[in-house]
Length: 296
Image 1 (cartoon, rainbow, N blue to C red):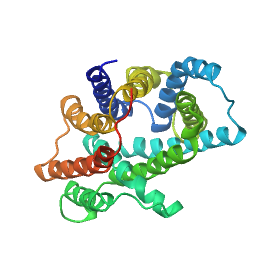
Image 2: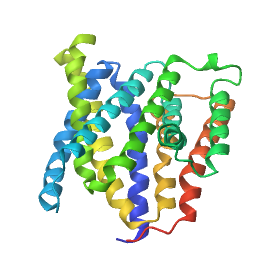
Image 3: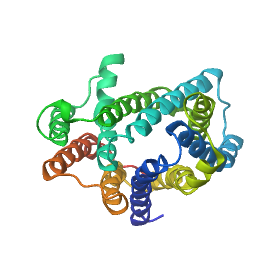
Image 4: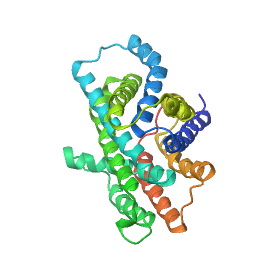
């Protein structure tokens, strides 16, 4: 596959994920956060399962019990992060959610320091300071009280996903079964959400029908299609280009939030979003530029 086609696939994945924030936000006009999470990930699980079974049939080695346990833990972390993000969208904008969620990129190296004393590349430290400055500007450049409960929950989501990403890199990537890992995450997240939803939210068939379009988009496009585009695209481009294009998710979230939901961010908030985005790129792209380009 030509590199330009792979890059277009990754850019489309970023756009699909960005639009996913709009679907997540508007769905809660009809249903609760847990019901939406359970429904969308059940649909994504069903969509991806055949590909995971195909991957398993072609695998040279069987997954061990420890591998499955790690996949389950990663799925649980995905549920926790997604729940924090989804509830956060009740009281924050799609734009804020998109950029604050992206902070997990900056947080991942700190997880390595705290848990395993793995010191990150030097670029992480100025990037972290830049991200903090961006959050301060996003709050209105007054105090942290300018951040809503939803903003704080989204920052918590970023922290949880940083932990999830670190465990994927450290403990699960050696299996060579990315699709199986993905479908396990989808299944665990969807199952936990659907089990808990009746205890915390009213569930009505009419409400599910009203949110069906958002559920379908989040499950099929943000889940199945975008994930597939990412997996295929990253095999045929360089790591810096992939990081840059996938980071466009936050920008697309802001664009689609403005178009479809009428989100408006004051100039100082836009500056904060810009600094957060620059910090993300510093952590993702600059270290990759120093490494050997990915082979096709």
